[in-house]
Amino acid sequence: MTDEQVLPFIESDPAASAESLRATMADQGYVFFRHIVPEDVILDVRRQILALQRDADWIDTDSHDLMDGVMRKDVVPTMEGKADYLAVYRKVLKLPAFHGLPEYSTLMQAASKLLDHPNPLVHPRRIGRMSFPNYVEATTPPHQDHFYIRGAVETYSCWMPLGYVPPALGGLAIWPGSHRLGFVEHTAHFEGAVGGRGVYPDELARPDAPVWYSTTFEPGDALFFHAFTVHKALPNLSGDQMRLSTDNRYQRPHEPIEPGALRPHFDLN
Image (cartoon, rainbow, N blue to C red; front, side):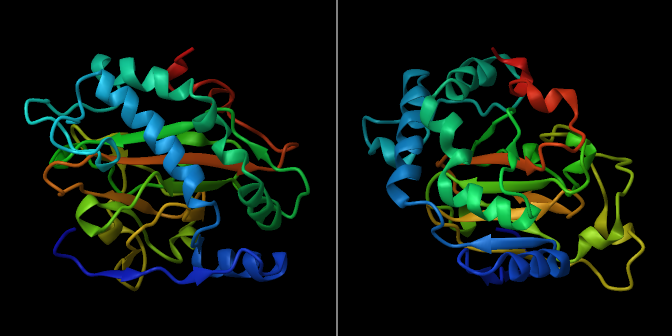
């Protein structure tokens, strides 16, 4: 992972009452669920994405099982926004299993409890992440999702790993309680990183230094967090494995939504 201390998430029970989950979100800025989606559902999505990457000659299936997601040694890392990445990503976005995942019943039930609404809206802009090993400069910096998604303040992001994500593969880290800062102007520029804009947590007006929380993620885990919660990716230092994950956003259907959230990611039709 990195040399900085990273503490384990406090886990929540998806069967808890709506009031309890909303109180946890109000306090921590996140709720973390273990195995809220069946493992086989997640691994099916993983298998389909890795098959697309194999067809693009990214994945080594001569010496390794497809599901291990081991990169070919001659592959040059790429990232969001680049043509070779988008050529594969366009196909990922068209997978019915990928597109339908955020509407899985248990995720919708959790979103319904957090939003106190019987029919939460899932943003049509589904987002997948394909994070190459040892491409540290592309690692997403600390930021708030509201900077990118705008719209309703009470929008909840849901980050899910598409496979096992031990510390060496990175994952996502949260700064608990940082949502209480309100919206922070994203004046920091991170050259070459996914997104590219963010914040320097040490410079924010807080009496305490930022403390990051994360975990060893397993298939079916889900991390919901507030649009103001400061979070970041952790670098993929595995050496040879692709990290796959997905981001989706939930809000009340009658509240404001940024028009871009209604279109495919990168407008990839």
